Length: 194
Image 1: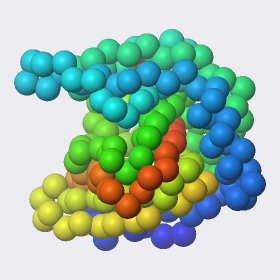
Image 2 (image 1 turned 90 degrees about the vertical axis):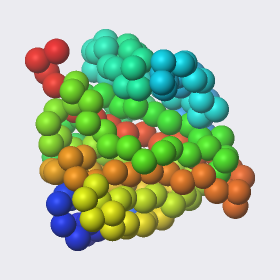
Image 3 (image 1 turned 120 degrees about the vertical axis):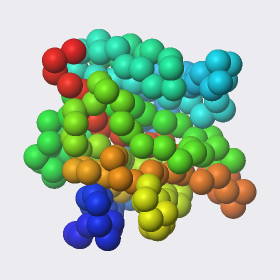
């Protein structure tokens, strides 16, 4: 495993960390058992409801604000606790929250952004698990504009850490080629001082 960023950050792509059978099982279970809701964002003072659905789970009822909307976490499901434990074994990171995204098809994506919310541990790791449709994922350096692309596979793990959020943007570009859903889990470390 090596850093896929050439400079100014660290992104490690582990590839598939679950078997095909286990990935399929987790995908079906997450679709069925997570309490999914449409996301909201306030842009230029106007509230927008996204097609993409989200859920937020954690070890306690943290409040978390992004895109000027505050969410309160639900407590871990048994399945999410199991995934959190697997990530700790793989990465040595003790994640305390998880923001989940459900993209119904390739029509739904995510614009360029960094995960720099003040509630997150500074330079803390973010672990991204992907299930379902394979999707392109892009990074863009904030200064040089250099782009790096990777294909996120079903059952795969990507870790962003160090100075990545300060120096790089990332996005999930929409595509007409993908018809199937994708579930993405981004395990995070919330600042314990909250």
